[in-house]
Image (cartoon, rainbow, N blue to C red; front, side, top):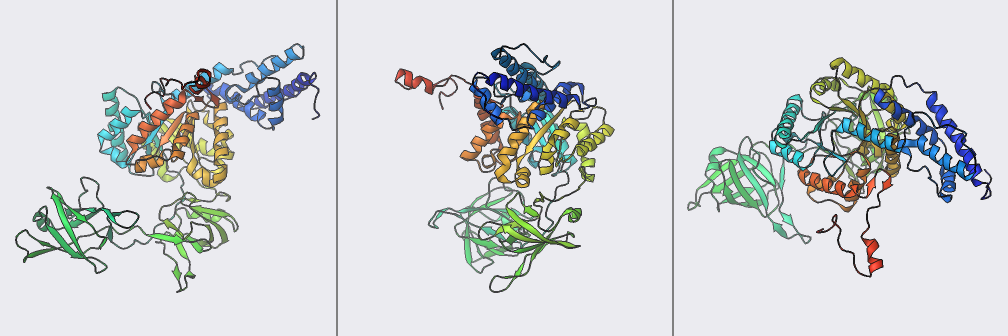
Length: 631
């Protein structure tokens, strides 16, 4: 388009924007929205308007609108047609023309868009916590079934949604989790949604032959190899009981021998490498004894422990270490290695190599869904364990797929059993709802407020879930679509219109698998597009995967994940995964979200009073504000 003179610019913009508006109205008018639930009709039309708007590259138009001091349409997701009409009205005034197009009847304006999103969010996720509009979802560990105080504290600290992963535990365990939650709700006078996450057709690696039954006991050392703290060993009667506090190793021993141990005494042994070692007993309890180890020791079942009672060094009492769990087996894969993925689920095996390290027989492992072999082709990429290991398919045989490893950390990456497999370019046709999902839905229909659909890929997948729920109950739980594949992302608009046939729905950005499927470099762009599309549909979004991950698991957050958690404020809910420090993670996330609420809502910056703005005017540091004082 040729540039217009400044005087003619309003006329040119008016013509271009009017054409765009006509396309938006026609797109929505041609769609059949009879099946959409009444609470979503206006939202569905707004979504169609937005999709029509975004079929063009609007950047040149945005720059020209901005030059005139007008809205650039960059924050119009929730009220797109009304925003266009407002800009058109101003352009007509600048061009001294009367209105050509009457405003669209029933078009969602700014206030209505905000109201619809808020209503749909509360219907799905429950009422907001005072002072924080973004909800917090927490994935339950198995301990939540028998540790009532954990559930109580999670709710007290701000958990709004309890997420139960159906890929783990069983219905009896889930039932106890829900019971603990209901008890905590009564005591705290708070409410919390129950979310059941269906496992779905997750592609995973098969089993591996178990490793040796050996326990490595290591003291803590500094950078120079000097011992800074001895290892803590829990000695307990066989079968082994869980240590009452953190232990570096647990060894089962005969109860009679254990009962003779006293603090200050020593235990001698020869470990699996033939090294003589000595342990000091530092304390005893009714259930066991604690020992300290200052040297690295390898213990196997049958290792002989010798104990000399105080004052009778000439008499040693012997005992043998009982059964120990085998080490989890892993395959070590290096870039350039051949690798075999098999149909059968027989235990996989490591590669055999010659004395020069060259692979003679490739490592193999099974695949939990052999049907994928029918949908893969040579030349397609394959990824394992959330993208930690990558390869390319070299050939497809009836019973196995030959892969060449192309991405692995220097020195080799370790692949274990039950790790995810992603085939982003393959034409897979997997059932959206597995037999296990159908069984789990019976529990969810009775106990859950929300069902999360894993690996939602097509509108037909969404229909299948809706049909299953309708057969189970006349008041089905809300449905959340987990977007974690490239197909799911590409089919999101159609899936949303299908989900909107129900009175309540939502979307989860499952960023782990999505990053592998779409490419890590594209993840930021993809999650932005999902946020925009869902805001246009007034559908709440759950920001998920690895939020405050190191804090929840290790007790100390990284700088990057604090920023990531703050970005989650653009969604309606942020999900935390389980970990030993999950209470600290909930506390931190609650604080981050409360602070961000004063600065950001969706894509709009909120211009709260800026403390730094006072410094230059007064020539002195600004006084602390209420939000930051004491930090």
